[in-house]
Length: 250
Image (cartoon, rainbow, N blue to C red):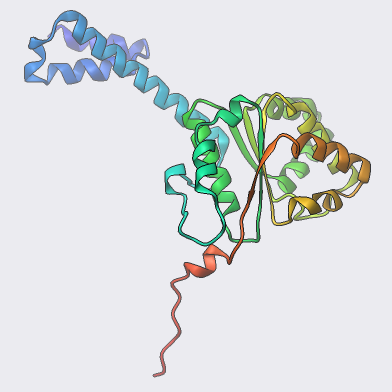
């Protein structure tokens, strides 16, 4: 009888994990075989797990990953030249701790975004903050933020995020303002945070895609020289996995 108000108090104190653990202990026949300290330890363990799960849920929600990707589900059977040993090394997230970046190139449909999101999901599991964005959309949002006075706040949010994904570099032409904003983003992160950039264009063509030679040199100097490169080849995975069948004659 005494435990019901105790559970209510734990919930009031937002000790949700401890409240759940105490309720489970009440319903377990063998719980009396444990000492007070053992039971308390189980409650504390449950509280820590509950809090970490909540923090993970918040990180994933803020990341807004485009793909529901899991590192363990990456497909190495598809012929696209994906180096499994390199991916396993990246799974440790040491590259984030060392403030390195990753550049992913390949034709449409070969899984660039999925791999980027899988790496980002792993980062979230390891406690890092993440933001996914398509670069063309981001640059448009930054232009709007500049107009309504939120520019500094938006750029600061990106600068302090442990990992950002800039998807689809080179998909649309960059304006002079876009190039300056992109330089600000990579400059704020250079040597301090990690970035994943994906593109249908080979890295060697990014300079021309950016446009202005001076700004392109500055942007790529901050991205390319301290980054792992993942070069995907082969046909679109969407095409090879298609389940469409030819209609039969009636």
